[in-house]
Length: 421
Image (cartoon, rainbow, N blue to C red; front, side):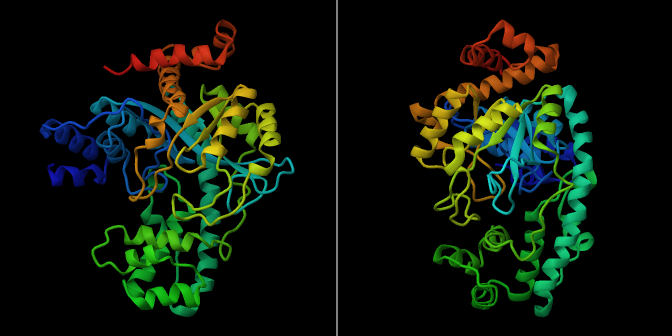
């Protein structure tokens, strides 16, 4: 591999990144071992929080052997066009989505958000090309409100860490870490990455840092993570430290309000723009796969009631991650999706260099339907882009023509597979 070209996949501009990708692919003689029974529709990029530009994210999916990949940034679609171009260069099927937090005030309390009640993480999947700018413009208001809140949370972080000589300034320390000037979003992870950078400068990779985390901040640091934080060669040090800090956000977290649309409103907007609104199932957490969630309960105790309410609100799909949940959780979820006739979408949340783009669980027969779902998403997006949103998978016209969801999935999956030559 040409290291300079590989590094340039994260260059400053999209043009430079795509140019590097084209040259890198042309220079490679060894192609990946592609696996038709794998997919990922939930890849974050630098336009929310990730070590990967849209171009590099697509390339990493390609090198992992995926035959398709889906972008899924928080509150932003500003990386979508670049991602789609990169996937085209690589010969990958591709999907475009966006993830948002939305108000869902139906008396459930904490649902799938670790830090806040009465709101949910949800997504719009399969966004047609002609709707990307319109939906991104709609989200710009919420990105702005999110930044107002981000600045206030930086003040709270400074309030806790100031006595240790560590201050966090939103404009100086956090904003430059993001692609906000290009329409990207700034998340809590940006704040914690900036804080991790300050702690690294202050303590280095030392026992003093470990003691500060455990004694002063009262955080738990496992032996595995301790090894990472003391390793002078660890390229992922700041991400590992971020993971430790994210385990306790109570001291700075301010409940989101104005930065969140109502779930019903976003379902309506997404549907009008030809996207597929989906609820992001989290499930009760035991040993966190991503390493930044403590063991806690989420929606499993009231899952049937929640899904019934989601269906009434107009959700068309449930998205979930097979490696994050237990087989029993997933079997129950699948059964409820069938009962309420909800489209099932898979995607492994990628926002850290330690996470794998591939999902080995999709090779298991009980999850094979998620491969067809991915290609159906690709088909939906392609047809909606080419012919109009009224030809999409859940449009009234299409539902009338093919009323059975599972027959519809197969029809659109066939269309999706034909988009890749």
